[in-house]
Image (cartoon, rainbow, N blue to C red; front, top):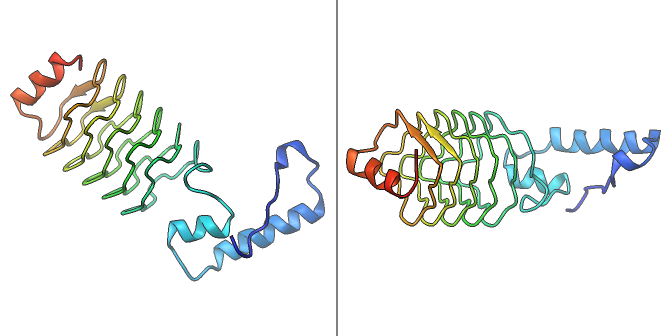
Amino acid sequence: AEGSKDLGNLGDSELTLERLSELKALIETIYTAKTHNFLELAALAGLNPQTDLAGGIFPGTDLSGLELSGANLYHTNFRGATLTDVDFSEANLSHCKFNGADLSGAYLGNTKLTYADFYNSSLALANLIGADLRGANLEGVNVSQTNFSGAQVARTRFGNNTGLNPSEKENLQERGAI
């Protein structure tokens, strides 16, 4: 990205005054940016949202409407985040934390969500066609009008779900949900 600096792997090199100065300048650039757009801020930092955000911590962050299809977001913390209408199709969201997050209308088709934790979140109107939810926690999740067609749900935990009617619950249990 224009104006961004590659700070290299700071863990493998000596943190010099020059590097600290570069880091300070980068932080100042991001802090004073005339945008609140997440993707624009990531570009200023020289980050590729498709590959550089895995393991990130984004609690309470509003990322509504972002296009993150195919992204590797393994083990990322989205607790309490607003993720309405985000396109996570074919992304790796394994082991992510979505506790209390709003994923209403999110597109999660063919997404890897193994062992993701959605406790007390909302997946209302979300599309999970073909998603891999094996071992995920969906307890207390609003699943009103959520599409689980073709989703892998073996060992997926459901319970106290808003919007889950008895026939849908039975179908999920027949497919291995607990």
